[in-house]
Image (cartoon, rainbow, N blue to C red; front, side):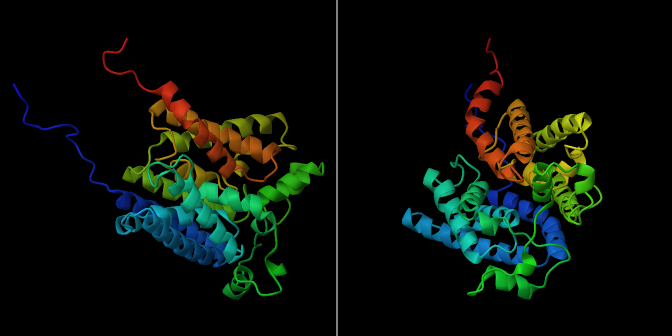
Length: 334
């Protein structure tokens, strides 16, 4: 008997790429607003710049490829890439840092591999690493608390002959910890500095908590699965706890590593990129754990204070192998 049901698939997900990207943007809002409240409007200015550059480059490249840019501009993928990039860089970075990073993310990391769905590396993190290597001074200048006004950020993002303002120069808690540990100071001494809060970096613990809240929203909406976030956080937690129990004066606490830097942003927003992450159930756990462990190792012994971007890009390289080794057995396969 011939079936009249037609060819598979018979069940269709009503969520489009645009709907998924809209949920990601909504989930980012609490963390972004907290960031702007604590450190000033620089991050919002960076978001506006990055989104504008991303849409411009997306339109131009699609035109050069002979594609209709309208559906791709509406799907929101370029906007999400831009927002993740903008949150990752220093809010006082000059405008041309954002221009170069977004150009690399959209043109090279995304469209050089075929566009959305074909890129091998996370575009936002590829753009971030590009400008981190090219412009280390501008990328490692961060604002101090309390928040600076919009005038200070305008002078830093759009510098005149005088360059960046000194009032915005500072170090992140991870950078402060790494530098002073290399000077043979103890963790208990280092954490008395003003850049530290209750258990994480001052201000950063609240930003990370709200990114965690945004991640829970995406889990509830079915935008992401639990495997990768849980594995990333478990990787950071288990390794940092082991070293902390070994020597609490040399290694910071697990809570500090979970609520400082980009840990929560990575676990819920960056590592879960559906194109560049592992696609099997067990593979997602391996992929996430690899990122979490690499983040801690790079923070502790790497050249940069926070190893999120490098950890994600290194894990992206192993995704095809992870998927091959963890693919589920086909029905009837022996």
